Structure formats: C-alpha cells, structure tokens
Length: 107
Image 1: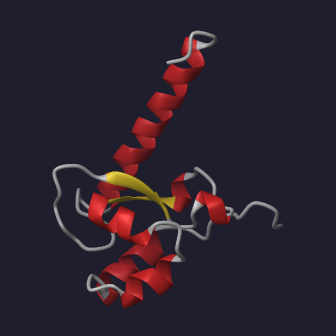
Image 2 (image 1 turned 45 degrees about the vertical axis):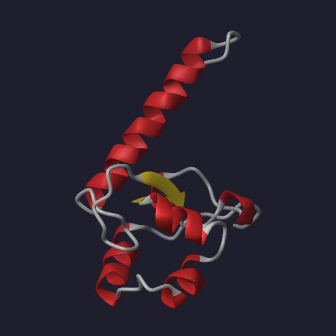
Image 3 (image 1 turned 90 degrees about the vertical axis):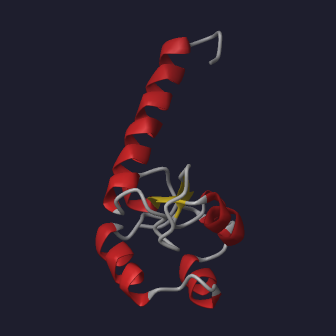
C-alpha cells in the first residue's frame, strides 16, 4: 500500500479481488486452460498486457500457476493448442465466456 494514497490502493486491491472471484466462478474453481483444481489460481491476461491487452474482465481468466508460467505472453491459441492441456471443449467454453478484448492502439 502506498503512503501517498492508501484508499486508491485499497480500491485497486478490491477490484482485483472481484475480477479474480468472477474469473474463478466462470470455470467453477478450475484452471481455464488445463482443468486442474489447484490450491491457488492466478489471473492470466488472454491477450498479454505486453501485447496490448487490458486489465478488464473480458481479458482475464483464472488459471493455475503452471499454465500461467508456461503461456507467458504468448498468443493463447498458439500456446494452448501446442500444449499437452489442449481441450477443445474447454476452448469452446472459454471462447463463449471471454469476449473479444480491446487491444491498445486499435479501434
């Protein structure tokens, strides 16, 4: 928490908690990519921030640490289809729950 504006930091933290909770609920507490039920889920940007993705609900999914680390900032479909965790049914579920995300610098 910063000393300059602690309320702003609390707001960000509560917003992130709400986003994470909603992302977890979309896949019933399982990793959106591999389907495992890990002890902890992390938020992954479908379109990485370094590739122009935003911190918005439509660009965030809850995933296990293994998948998040493995994917890194790569394009989701290229990484996922080449991974041992590819599952077409999960892909359809993800595609129906994650909207097309705005990318910085595009209309």
